[in-house]
Amino acid sequence: MPDMLVKLYELPDLAVPVGELQQSGIEIRRAIAPEKHIVVDWVRQNFSISWASECEAAFANHPASCFIAIENSSLVGFACHDSTCKNFFGPTGVLPVLRGRGIGKALLLACLHAMAHQGYAYAIIGAAGPVDFYAKAVGAIPIEGSVPGIYRNLLKE
Image (cartoon, rainbow, N blue to C red; front, side, top):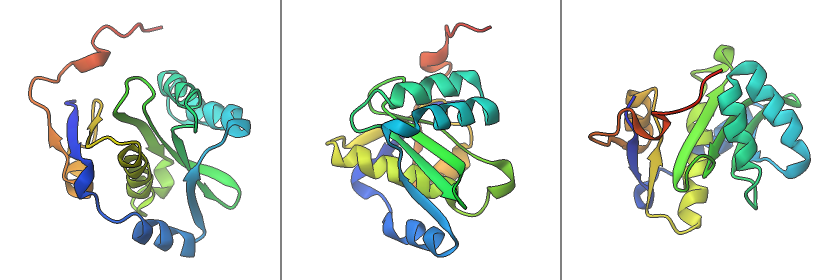
């Protein structure tokens, strides 16, 4: 999976997808420190231990660089930035049963807008799985020669 590059100065509006989700009962917001154990455990249980480690690193930033999606007081999605590397988006995930409702796009945009507010002009989506999704959602383009990228020598259990 290649890394992808996003122009943060040409992002779609964040208010529209977040507003649409709010009307359907889903809140997108930045996670806060007292929620760290809940979010990290949820990511570990629903995705992977590696992603949980990256999520935990996102909570070390101030403010936390982790955004969450909540429906009926339950966590349904997450997205992080500046966790494994500065200026990197990811990891991110939404419960499989809720995919296709715009939650992933809203989480992506929340992170990318936060990165733009920090002064970044571009962002890197690390090891982008759904390349077509990122291209359509934010105009991301693959970075040539980025495979295997920063995860090439990752320790495995």
